[in-house]
Image 1 (tube, rainbow, N blue to C red):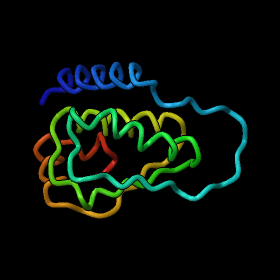
Image 2 (image 1 turned 180 degrees about the vertical axis):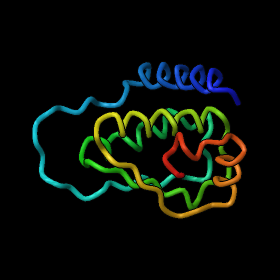
Image 3 (image 1 turned 90 degrees about the vertical axis):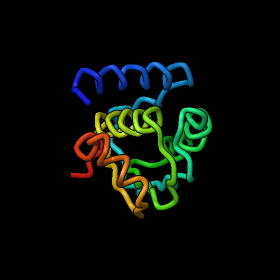
Length: 124
């Protein structure tokens, strides 16, 4: 997958996220250290799940600074799901927040390797 292809995919995901309400912006006010919010991904990270994923992620995004994403249950992930995760991670990091990963599913690892997303997801 070329860098141009990845940029195009990311632009598409950003557009989808904006249509769904986007990720709330961070303010510049100092804040107290908060525990990481945990997002537990289900077995399917696909285009059909994008709206549901956003709904599930919003409360964590609004109430915690750092995010831990648990991928233990992931069994299926298509390119749209991968795009959403890459866009999500970039958005969180651009706000000065930290993303960590926990759990491990063989399928998630296979998709990450196949699409060479280690660096984009901060897994390197």
